[in-house]
Image 1: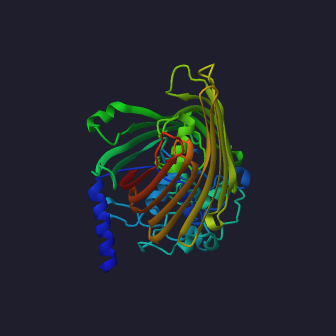
Image 2 (image 1 turned 60 degrees about the horizontal axis):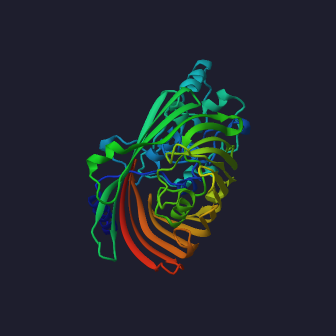
Image 3 (image 1 turned 90 degrees about the horizontal axis):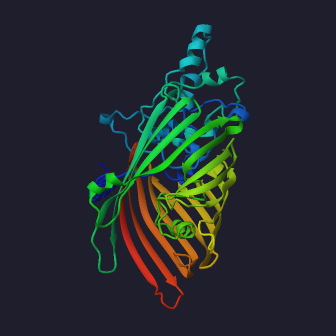
Length: 486
């Protein structure tokens, strides 16, 4: 085995030894990563439906059931997980072989004349899916330039289904009315300065979800979450701390790929990621809740949105924030509008969030946030930049406002292994009081086999409040992660 592979495998084993086992959520940048791969979420070479009936988009529903992203994965997301988001295939675990490119599929070849009976059978069940004997094919063979049906609209649903092979997500949806999944995230961190320099491993999060579809596009979804605490918590206390992550009903795949949903969940705002220690995430949490971590936030909301192809938009009516107090009167509106392209995986997104909390009649609270994001990929580089402005006005006691700019960079150096660099700069302190703050994160991410990710991060944080009683703080943290999901 080449020397560089031995070094790489030893590094992975070290991470796994430090962490044991973990799981986490998918991340928005992966949509940019696979935007140019026509087999990224379904079989290559599928014909399109006319725009009014088309589902294909680069929205959060490309991988998740929830249009707001995160949580339970759809059949399309599991396809991506099984075939693409991996660096190795473990035969003993019966992990599937890679899909062959379009020109090797039965429906991609020139067809001899078929009988009416055979045509009906193919429409009903599909051609067998052809696998590749290569561990990894050249991904360029799966782009739109190698797909002759890329700009072809099927004239009927029957013609559309003729080009959909067996085991494609479209067909798997007809085989199961009930499906589910889970996420587990184990974490370990070590402060590189100060008195406490011990390694602190803990279960960060465990999430389980179940979905019932009485009709093909009617979804009843429930997700439960268990959250751990870094220090001083015994593992056997975690099962008693179950909370609802989401509970909603949704009707999707309406004309122009419109969805309507209502229930309890977190409406989408900006570039929300699982990393709640990211500077922008902490600042937004302080603005909306007054706390550094808003992981437990849950809203009662009603949402409608559309993602027919390039343009997308969704708007959310927030009726209350759940779990705060019985007299909660926080209401408002949030929305996201933008464009997503196959070319360079480019996207631009504008988000807004405005809520008013009148729970205390004499001291109402108003929150307003705006975000704009640009993202794209070139060769092995994935880059995104986001700017967020935010303000919180408590009528009698407090007023905070500020902004933060975040630059995300990822470089894919081998298969699904990435070097990462995130830089954030804010014109206020982390708690959005007068001052300044910054964050630099260096690390690596490794998607090893389907449903298994490990990573390491080295974070340098600076927080400088200008208040007379505050002092500048600098902190360096080394953290490890193992992420498993199914």
